[in-house]
Image (cartoon, rainbow, N blue to C red; front, top):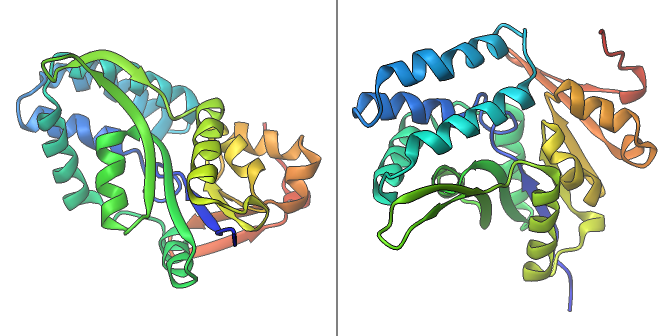
Length: 244
């Protein structure tokens, strides 16, 4: 049986220009599901620290997850699905030109296009539907028997979880990883990038870039893409110098 070519995409920071979970917090406040102080006292300080480039994005992401888990505990699934739908309706076009165009190209080539994201599954589902993805994986926030969030989460933002997802999807779709593609921006995407022959770092974080530069096999095949304003740059990884 002929194997299929796939393109695996992270979402936050790779397709979407920021973090979708931040938009969820704002909507939760708007609909009076959480107090504004939750954002201003717990979320905003870490967001601003990262936004001012005074903090690490991966640390900020994990901090946001911890706050999100606590914030939605006891909420109904349909409440979060409604918010996720509104977020993507209003913010879903704030994407990078490069990855938006790559999604279209992969679709035109008949490739299987899959989102593998650390964002909550409700958000990933809406984003995947908007951009006509064939399948998706996201972080699963578990529910109790009454359909309320328990405060537990099955992650999809770390390398180990994404590796497991890639293995499952490869078997499900009979994927030829040697001719497939992956797009990511953080250290959590490292194994996803290692798995394919055509990996792309999209505006990579310092930690991911260091991992790439210390991995000779990945370094030999990586494409480093930086998009700023209305210009997209493809960088030669051998010429990149990380300024400490």
